[in-house]
Length: 374
Image (cartoon, rainbow, N blue to C red; front, side):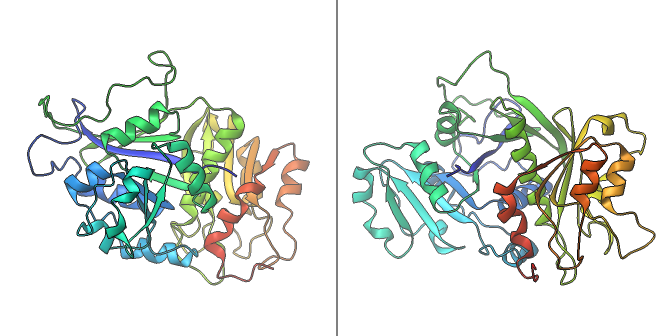
């Protein structure tokens, strides 16, 4: 049983605050960043928020985009991710908007807290974690429920707890061009005993500008090649869920990585109705880019070995022509559209290292359930 991939998402001011001390919520993100967060929500199986934030902000915690919700359903997922809150005290009232919008809701609490949550009957499932909140036990329970990707949206105590327990796999830190400067306002993290602090450095995986926000993507844990492969394959699966729907072609995501950093991405039908995921990713780089010689291509589906849309090259040939030495895939192409795909065999014959992550095959296939997978 594999615990969910845990992604912490937070917006903060330049001086580290996630709100001010007034009664109204401080809007740190702009419209572009809210849309980015909406995409991350849509890519998640569950979203978790602490009870204190729930009481203070009274959010609905939804995927706002109708197209993204439709994409989830086309992939065989519920319209909305599972919504989760955590409370030690059980001090939650049934009038909060959280309970009355979206899909299923789940409350993790203590034995003492569960006593006061009878009022949520019919609104949410209540689960006691025992005498105290244990976030490792919480993740184990979510794994049993089939949750593979958990987005954590705060607040301070929750983010601190996940990082202090070394349970966070990814951190999206959106830095707004604002200064708060009020010691009474909440900060991103409380003081805590963090693993390896202050000498363990996180890995900076990506930096992006979204509107006037700087979005930093950190990886808190040291990782080996196997963990890196799983992380980037999950990223490719996220991309596959963005594919425009098709009844005649697979939805595939691809990520090109060099030196542990994402250098290009692509997904099926991203730029036109016929483009393949690997093709789309490679089209974004110069053919002479020196990073290709040490890159790994992560693709949710075996690269094609033949194309019906001549003169386009099969993706296997494109990978070989680019000189990419390593390919990681989640599942082999079935005989739905091609009788005998030999992408893996051809790559290996040419000396390319090919790794298959069978444990992620079901997730990689999930957005193709409407097709006859023969």
